[in-house]
Length: 353
Ligand SMILES: NC(=O)C1=CN([C@@H]2O[C@H](COP(=O)(O)OP(=O)(O)OC[C@H]3O[C@@H](n4cnc5c(N)ncnc54)[C@H](OP(=O)(O)O)[C@@H]3O)[C@@H](O)[C@H]2O)C=CC1
Ligand SMILES: N[C@@H](CCO)C(=O)O
Image (cartoon, rainbow, N blue to C red; front, top):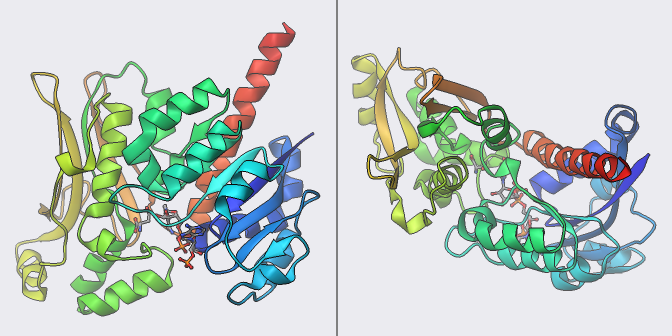
């Protein structure tokens, strides 16, 4: 049985949910997946940092009501975050990066991933910044150091889309995609349809753990823009940068826009899309679209996401599922660790043969 030592960078909604899962599911994972997870370090801007080579009790981490700098009370702890030292020196096999997504330059998460990969540690992340902005560099670093850089949760949270499309749709010839790729804005539009005002709907999405640390990223489309870049680069072989994707959010949609759409049997959705053009270039965009009720994406409600992948050989294939949420996104991290585990096992089997 394998034990993976992991270090959590950021201890907000997602990484805390991963710790919750570890506290209860390790015996199940040991039986069904062949590994357990052991948290050897955590670093968080608010709580501080702690390293414990033998492992921290996940239940205590989750249940103790730590206040600002609270990790300083623990053995091996300090009241300040210390990401670089933790990432480089903690005895971790895997660095779990779940700090805030910076849509401008991806920092400091890009540096977190870089330090980890350079130290020969695998990285799993739900942070969209490093994937949209520095994937090429980070993938090359991972390869050079014989480790993995995995990021399934960067698009559609725990709903498999990147790995599913790359592995099970290989050869189907992807031509483009369009989808609902932000749970918060979809939730907000749905609440507005029911008469709630914009600001209250955004607050609800924050309470439910769907929104970004700065929800402007959700409602202005910046979050979807990163996801369009990630999918276009992964699935269409593009090398788009966020600033090359046109972007309009939902903040200018008024209650009367929502009512007017309803009157003609349609509703507004924030759509992210990309298409491969005749000349081989790829164009991406983010904008609100008024979809008739019978459109496949019109019935996608709440924080659910959906993406229709347009392929040459299969036509349109639509994947739908949770697009945000703490546990749902922690599951994406688990699925990345399963991918690492399976790849290592395959390599070991090959070497043994
Ligand atoms: N929640 C969701 O549904 C999903 C989230 N994601 C992505 O996953 C990541 C984590 O999301 P979530 O847990 O919800 O976000 P939270 O804001 O709840 O948690 C982020 C945590 O990281 C801490 N943090 C911020 N900057 C640093 C830093 N430089 N060093 C150490 N800690 C830091 C924050 O501290 P402080 O609060 O003091 O700033 C906070 O505790 C984000 O990048 C998000 O975009 C992806 C898919 C879905
Ligand atoms: N804030 C994001 C989280 C998932 O990336 C959303 O609402 O979709």
